[in-house]
Image (cartoon, rainbow, N blue to C red; front, side, top):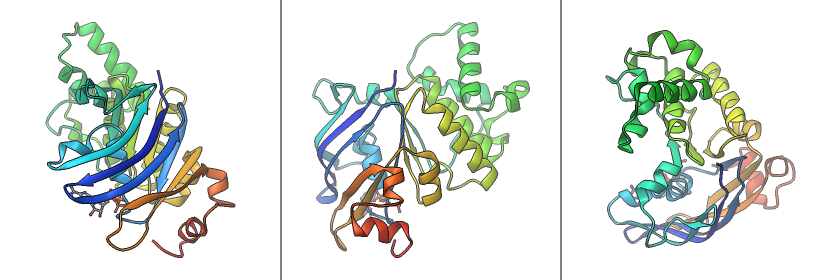
Amino acid sequence: MAKSIEVTDLDIYYGDFKAVEGVTMSIPARSVTAFIGPSGCGKSTFLRSLNRMHEVIPGARVEGKVVMGGQELYGSDVDPVEVRRQVGMVFQRPNPFPTMSIYENVLAGNRLNAKRMKKAEADDIVERALRGANLWNEVHDRLNKPGAGLSGGQQQRLCIARAIAVQPQVLLMDEPCSALDPISTSAIEDLIHELQTEYTIVIVTHNMQQAARVSEDTAFFNLAGAGKPGRLVEMNPTKKIFSVPDDPSTEAYISGRFG
Ligand SMILES: Nc1ncnc2c1ncn2[C@@H]1O[C@H](COP(=O)(O)OP(=O)(O)OP(=O)(O)O)[C@@H](O)[C@H]1O
């Protein structure tokens, strides 16, 4: 089931470099939250801290608290692999395993979880995930063909199918449409709308119209200055951010005056 995320005073480091400082926010369940802000302000870094992907970089670490559905993600008894199963991620460039079939691509996460599956169970997971990602109708007659044979937009929906096949509680999306044409982008945005009834979704986007179209809430990040860490300037309902934001720098950014 979709879970909310509470972040308290989170600092994020790459070695000695503090990339993000003092973020406190509540990300509601079954809703889409957008992260916006100029390049380098730490949106992707912060996103990756929400499923413990940040720490796979040598020397990278966080200080502070991230609680998902009541569980402290950075607790000493928490297995980061289990966190990543619960919090799925979709990246900027569609990254299906190119030689693997569409069918096996969808199941890749489930296979990693090392669960033995009967064929009927696997078929069921594949169909449900592909239907959930709005891709079933386009690929059901070629499930054994390689994932690389799909268009960019289809590949991104395949990656979303792979992410939801393990039934995560949260889906993180890091600029999921930046490599896609407008029609594929629109298909992904429609899909995000549908998925939010079941998942907590967080999306990083450079596209202001996209943030306005898909999200309920928007968080604006910025740098306090060159070489300074990124920080959360404000988080508010998207309608408010795009009409009467609290902070003048938010307005300057969304109206294209900087960033
Ligand atoms: N692997 C890394 N090692 C060291 N520093 C990094 C690493 N990845 C990112 N950084 C630094 O952390 C800061 C935040 O980067 P991040 O990619 O999170 O920003 P962003 O807001 O997502 O940017 P963009 O919008 O351009 O993708 C930047 O100063 C960046 O140079």
